Length: 372
Image (cartoon, rainbow, N blue to C red; front, side, top):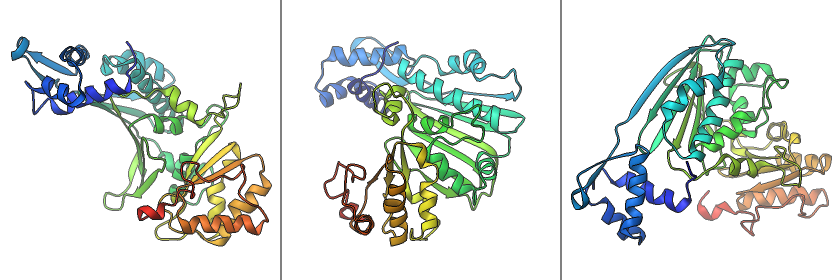
């Protein structure tokens, strides 16, 4: 099975998303939209038929296409020493996923084995339910355990204030309650491999969408608490993404150094409700465990303002105490940028390579232009 290139992914996605309303004219529509030959379109259609994404009937000009029927599968596994994630993958999951491009299967292999193993080793539950739904366009997997709940367990193990703080720490990466046996990288990288990755546990909900640096959470007020932990993973069946591209993004970049050295911290998660980020305690919450990384990107998207003490703790105190760690603020509006520069000025420092703004925007990513 070969990998998928971005152009081919776009064409096949178009075919799948439009074939239901245009079963006989989908080939002609694709030719007009992409400016490619009939032979090229037919090759993409034939590939989708071979992969089980489409069905075809009729001959030549009378040929029509339709989305293949949805496959649904579910199984519950007891949590025992004999229930290894590799065994479950080999005996069940791999065949249920069916024929997919090699890069897509490699994402599912990583995501499933990491999340199933986490549930088996950390949940303190008795069983794991795996539910899968596959369409011609996407595949969704749910892994649910009946344990103590991931956020509650992290909160207790690390003596955190509440479950929301556990989510914040998860979003940074390198977080584990069992450092002897786990690196704490599984959830971080899995959340960034899939189109959408969600965790529902206790009274809170965590979500990350591909292409968005910020993670977010919302409390489940109306539905109440969810026992155990439910993990949802969504992925397009024809994505061009590869695990290597995602892993490389967070490696150190230094020759012969393949360590997980970079993290992106969604600063918005340090806010509770309508509270403004003004205190040193809030800044220290942002900085918790970031000394494990060489490069820390602080994403200020949706943060309208920060206080002097908050900025001083990060951009003067922490920087002075950790000169070998890069702190890079991005998506700062004019007010946030002003407070950061003031903290530097108070320390008799000017912007330097150790504290750059987002290089994609010369004014420091002034999101106030976009109404943020």
